[in-house]
Length: 369
Image 1 (cartoon, helix red, strand yellow):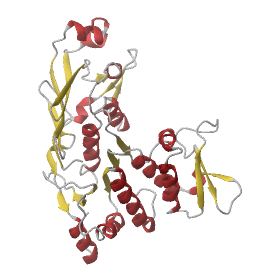
Image 2 (cartoon, helix red, strand yellow):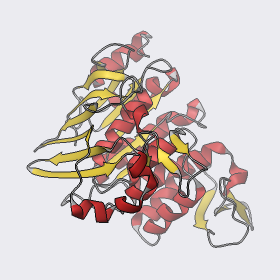
Image 3 (tube, helix red, strand yellow):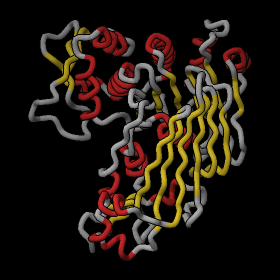
């Protein structure tokens, strides 16, 4: 479990630090204060297995280049990961985490390219027009987990972009491949992702747990099932699942049940599939009525403790953070910890509210956002 996080020159942060992290951490702050960027920093740090996370983070923001004059002309516009949106030789950003037993970090920097014969063959650079026309600089990504160190070097094109095809040629062999990180965006998970996560828990105790979670919003739900293989599933829709209601003889498409059910399903599937890992949720209250938020927090908190999942979530909603106080008030305080972190633009640290302070703020009507 992360106890602290420090970032340097990443996105909108020249330097920033989160301290006193608990098992459940809610990030609050104004728009453009960097809450989502902090979730991405944690995702890059904890998703140690490979480079797919880097592509996922940047594509979701539209940070890529399309060069129609060349085949396979898709490139990650990596300058947007760096503070100030500019890169040159020597540019660098770092994300550091302190865990219970070790330090871990990811550092990304740009340096002049000096390629070995092995690397030239690996990336087929001798036949690559992007490389021939470039300034021959490379992006270096270095992971450090405890005493284990691993480094990957990737060519940048003449646009200082990172071609997608180079990412596919990197295979990491880290000992920490068991780390699980799930990221639920503000627009929720895609139906194909949710079907895949549901398939992982079919015929396990967690399958019944998903039904119980949905019952916090609709008590008449008796069972949920995936129909992902059926031909009428459409990408991007709330499809792929049906539910059975206690007072209905027919199965009901889950899309007919409203956004709240879909959001709760995504949250539940994500957290049970993040066992011994990390759950990241952007705008956790999306699609949920304020009356459901206390039940949502109770579900997430109890599941996080049972499955050893560290949770980081963001919100703009006062009902969302104040409903968390009802959970914090019962913990006296808990050894795992529930915290709220207020993020203020251009400040180097978050303002931390512990369980006791969360309860006092809610009782006295003190605004923590």
